[in-house]
Structure formats: C-alpha cells, structure tokens
Amino acid sequence: MAVEQLIETIENTISEIKAKNSDSFSLFFKDEYQKAYQKNVLIDAKILKRLEKLPSIDCLKIPAKPSLRTLTKREFLKLGLEEIENTSVFLQVFEELCYQWIDEDLKKKGLLFLDISEMNSGPQKISEKFFKAISNSNIDRITSSAGMLARHVFLIYLPESVILKKPISIHINPTGKTNYFPVLLWLYAGKGSSVSLIIKSSYKGTDSSSYLLPIEVRAIVEEDGSADLLEIQDLNENGISFPYHEYHLAERARLESFVCDIGTTFSRRRMIANLEGTQSEANLTGVYKPTGNQKLIFDTVQNHRGSFSKSDLKFKGVLDGESETLWK
Image (cartoon, rainbow, N blue to C red; front, top):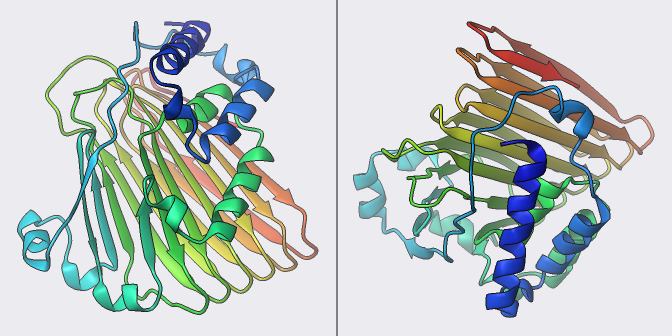
C-alpha cells in the first residue's frame, strides 16, 4: 500500500464515522485536530517516497471507547508487570479495556490521571494550553487523523512543586482486535514539578495481519519543571508505527528524552522540541536495531525560541540484513 492509499483509507474512515455519528467529532479537542488535518495536505512526501510500499490495510477498524478499570493494590500486584514500590502511576492500554493504578498519596497532592471522558472536568486552563499547542503544530495528516479518531486519550496532570520520585509507567499492548489503534498521551508538568514517564509498546496478540499504531506524546513543562521520558517500542513484524512527540518547554524547563526502537516492519518517528523559555533545555537521544526488511525513519526538530536555550541530539543504531534507516 502506497502512502497515498493510506491517506485515502484514513479519509474514507473519517467520512464514514462522521456520517454514522457526528457526536464523535464534537468532543472538545477533536476540532483542533480536524483543523490541523485540513491545513496540512501533504505527509512529508520527500521522506516517504523513498520507501517501498507499506503493508496493505484495506480499511481501518477503529476500536470503541475502552472501559477503564481502576486496580486495587492487590490486583496490581497480581499483574506482575511492575514493582508497585517503584511506580507512581500505572496504565495498561488494550483496545477494549484499560487498567490503571494511582498512588493515593500522590492523588492527595493533586496528581490527576484523566481519560477522554474526564477531561472536561479537569483544569480548563490546562486543556486550553494543549488546544493552542495543537493549533500551532505543523502535524501531518496521519498524526492529525489519529487525534480525530482516537478513543484512547489520557491526560497526566502534575501541579506546581510536586516531585515524583517514582516513574509513571504506561504499557500499550495491541492484541489484533483492530488494525488501527491510535493512542494520545498528554503530559502537563507544573512550575517546579518533576516527572519521569516510561512508555512501553509491544504486541500481545496472535493475529498475523498488519496493523497501524500511531502514538502521540504531547508534553508541556512549565517554569523550572523537568520531565524525563523513556519510550521502548518492541512491536512485532506486522506493526506499522507512527510515533509523534511534541514538547513545549518554559523558562529553565528541562527535558530528557530517550527512545529505543526495536520492532515493527515500518516506523516513522517525529520529535519536535519547542524551547520557548529562557534557558530551557532539551536532550534527545535514540537507539535502534533494525533487522530483516525493517525501515525506520527519524525526523527531529528543535525550535530555539527562548534566549540561551540549548538542545543536544544523539541517535545511534546498528543495522542488519536489508534494513534501512533515515534520520532527518
């Protein structure tokens, strides 16, 4: 399937959902993604035209809004996926069901973990900051369409001066029940706060058909705040991954980002760091190890808008077989 066919399939899906249920597009942030979709017609054709055809997907099967289950401490321990003593927040994301666990002491300090149905009840000014970030983003049509069609949307809100000593851990696990599984993760770190976020994506199904997994990570870090992000992508060979990271850093805010790409047959990763405040800092690091016929694209952008801001990039990989990488 060529890129043009993929875009056509996405557009047909959007039209079908609009015809069936216009309310699905009336959620508060969907309009911003729709504006971005209409504004940006192309999807980085200069990069994608160099690649072979993508695995064929004739139609997009959009998952329904998932059920969200809050785990007790005992239930969390039974999962055996994380050490509870080393976790502030845990989220496991499947197509039909999501599990969450939050440290009660941190909830008392104002830490919020909201899904799409709860965001209207969250801090309104924070939502507006994300709306503005989306409207000013130069996102391509795959990323913006994922925002319009996503049913798995989560906001992590950290108020001022809260230091998380233990990381937030998120597992994204497609099972093959749908072939299109967009996930949106929004992170807000208030003034002087500090947070570590670990994202792990891996395939948990047995189906051998191709699937698309667009994951958007959008972070806003306020003055003197810091965020450490680690993402490990270890999907199987049938996956097509479109991760998109965008960061907004205020005065003296600091970001450390580390990505590790191992799986998928094709991945196009875009990372944008907006250093908006004076003395803001972003360090972007990545490692990758493609084998066989894997193709990995890395597209990194640093916008130095604040005085004395600085960024650093370090991406390294080892290629095997007929694999290809492209870093722009």
